Length: 324
Image (tube, rainbow, N blue to C red; front, side):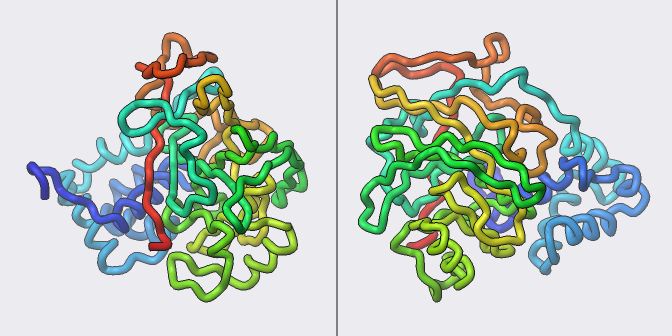
């Protein structure tokens, strides 16, 4: 507890994020009427069905939420559930936003380490849409040019084009950090740089033999792997599917590199690619970026060197190094 603010455990936070995504997903929509009728039992059963088995810790966490919002009488929880279950809002077009650090200063591509084992995330196109930022390299940590490639969607056999990497070495890419299978998020899903491409590492860096073999066959020096159920993606080839159970590649965020300033922008997504899991459309969501300018829609803009943006930006967050 700090200054009267309760501290939420990391596992509980991850569990809560997954639960909220399921509650908001049209396919797994939370039934408020059933909640009014059955109360806590419905919430427990819903969470277990859509997020996974509830151990005593997660049950205590859910019970604490209900008590915390005054839901001993179930009806008092309905306003909160209604808020979590609110309808989507839509963007007219993908915003053009610059990627900044925690101080609000634009990051430079030259400052992004190659094969960084740390989980670097930014939100795009809306709040909560977490995205990996990767600077890909070979086994010697030299940047690799990532060319355009055709990506197949195993779910339906359709294809789309991934435009390749950006930056001075065309090695920087960005993909959704929400697993396309059941929505697991970092640290369960994360990047395996080439030097960690081996089996036998302890959790959360366990890589199954089938994933390693699939990467070798695809000529992928590293992978994005999800510990939840084993889905593996190839970030060197558009985050295509290497191993299931996922049948959908990770959606990519298109980046723009300004060679004059070395600044990096997120500028769009491919509407022919699969949508972010839990979204009906990549232009729809539940909250705008906090920096989003509704008046302008964050149309194309290029900052001058040293200029700090007042809006239309997304902050790069470091979610830690799982290999330490």
